[in-house]
Amino acid sequence: AAVIVNNAVRYGTGSFHSAASWFNVPAANQAVGACTGNWDHLFSWVGLDGWRNNEVFQAGTESDAYCAGGQTQQFYSAWYEWFPSLSVRITNLPVSAGDAMIVWMVASSSTSGSAYIGNVTNGTVVGINFTAPAGTVLVGNSAEWVQERPYWNGVLSTLTNYGGAWMSTEGAQILGNNSVFTFGNPGGATPLLVTMLDNGGHAISFPTQLGADGTVFEDEGSAK
Image (cartoon, rainbow, N blue to C red; front, top):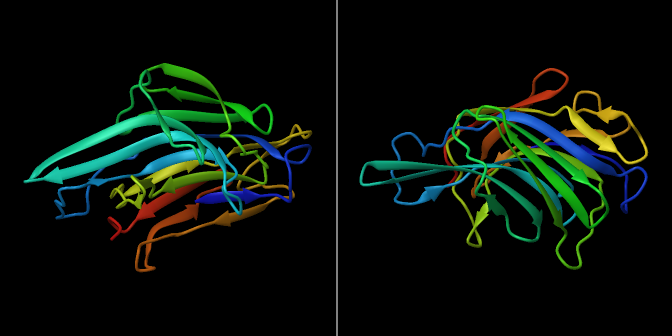
């Protein structure tokens, strides 16, 4: 993950209220030589919060891989989520491996916002307005760009072997400030790169800052 963190403690002036990214949808494969009979999952997303708090306002794509009996399948979809609610797949926005995506998250208050998701490759764009789960409020203390090994049916999934992926980390805006904060130029915020670990504590997905406004992610194969 690539994260920019500020000092906001409640939503208001000084909170991140928007974040954006463009990226290509990672290709989905299982680990080299593996055919597990199960699905592997990868979520690629941009969002607000989730760092040192228990809610996330986010949207992105999923890249899933399956293999059984030597037969492989891939599944791709766009989705949105205000965690702790579950993610919702977007059925009218077709997604394939390698498609160029633009995702822009905009909070209009601490409990409502919009996800604007565009597939530049096929020319499809959707805008979705949604609200926070009951009892959940946005803080706006972090903006995140993430390749995630998600929980699936209540269990931490095996990571899709996505090989490598690049995401722009060039758009996060603070309420009351017209400046655009980037990972490479975070202003008063703190930039963090976070490595993903497998169940044994071994590093399996590595972020590296690439220039002022992009992060490249690389994996070591599927998690255990």
